[in-house]
Amino acid sequence: MALAKESLFTTKDIYDLPEGERAELIDGQIYYMAPPSRRHQDLVLKLCQAIANYIDRKGGPCRVYPAPFAVFLSHDDTDYVEPDISIICDIDKLDDKGCSGAPDWIAEIVSPASRRMDYFVKLFKYRSAGVREYWIVDAAKNRITVWNFDEDSMEDYTFADAVPMGIYKDFSIDFSGFDLQ
Image 1 (cartoon, rainbow, N blue to C red):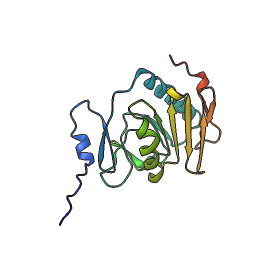
Image 2 (cartoon, rainbow, N blue to C red):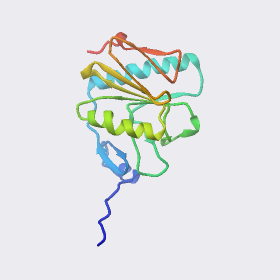
Image 3 (cartoon, rainbow, N blue to C red):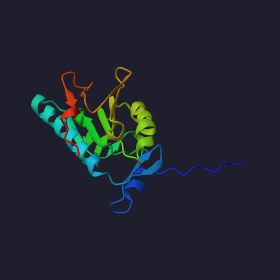
């Protein structure tokens, strides 16, 4: 007796979604995304500003991109994510569609609807795809969890801390300076 084949979605299905509907694709499964909150967007903006200012001062090839920004984690068409913030240092991975391959650094801002995805599904997916560093920024828990996959380490910080960035040895982001209402 033949087993029924499980239906897998592709990036074509993501691009065929109705206008304004956002989703990610992980291992051929679609995960729909709710619109972000204002505080979520404030955090994305503050982090992007700090990172972009650092990159501008230091120079170099790295680029920072906020969501929505397409990241194709694998070379097949079953993985498409839109991390809240991505840093890509290998410009050969960039084209007009987004990033093909793993970014060097990713941050996800946790929302009630994304908690399981950010802490479990994406953690595993980003690590196995070759992301060097992954930050989970959880305002509800006053916690920033930093996974440095290059060093096989994990550290927790609070919003009162300056959080060192592993991909840049001379840069930290001071969360205590963020004015978030």
